[in-house]
Length: 165
Image (cartoon, rainbow, N blue to C red; front, side, top):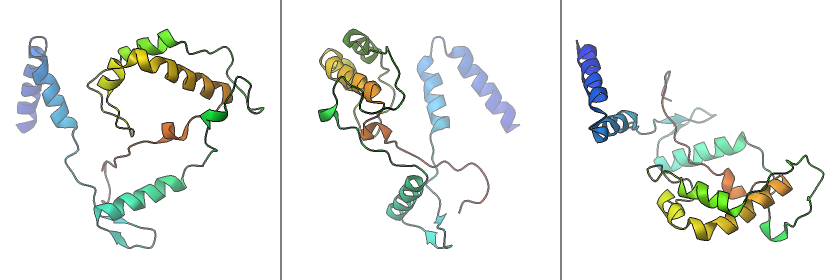
């Protein structure tokens, strides 16, 4: 009975979406939000990790252990020559007008990345940012390396199934 009521409610929201889009997106966002805190974790020795700060440290160490470190790209020393003999993508040039266009097409509703730079800021300063970003993109493709800041990510554990510890 509850499932049928929810199905009917969702059908009504979808039917009304054309003239009440806010209602649809509000419902979708409410269903997607993770309301559960990170559960108690168990480390490799069977010790419970309870405090949020300790959980963050434990998860950070775990994720760091499964990824390899690459040397950082030093933009000060990148020039037009290929730095080493690694395979490189040829003929890819990021032109300032294209970078500016892509910045202007960013969706402001999307959340910021680890740098906390809002899309609105990037859109509003697209003409000023397009030149330095085009240089960074071209240097990255030329050298075959990414700046370390681009490898950062916000990771949120989401409980799926099985034991919560």
